Image 1 (cartoon, one colour):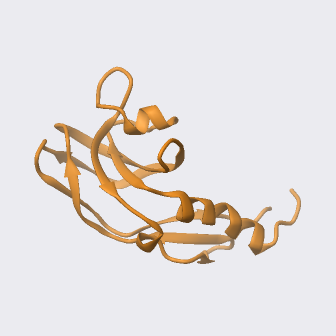
Image 2 (image 1 turned 120 degrees about the vertical axis):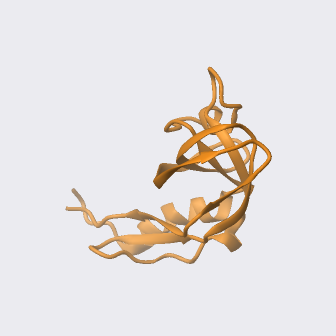
Length: 128
């Protein structure tokens, strides 16, 4: 694989930081914006929502083991919109799934309550 300078890795992570508008918790791993943002039924996996902006995401920095990363601040007041077991997160712009991954642990959620998430990282490793 070709060498990628940190500015290239940072540019990819900056798209997430600059374009994000919402974080969703999901019952299954989303692979599209519709999966992440649509009600938890046949077409979507959304269990809860938290509005986020670049202020909720730290600047790019070195990643342990090589590469670059951004850290998403802890969430303490996400809105649960459906009952279920959340196992995944998704960060989206108004129309695009920007990043998704597994939660560190699943959590049962109930419509009308709030959800919390510990701070977590999104990283890109150095090419090998």
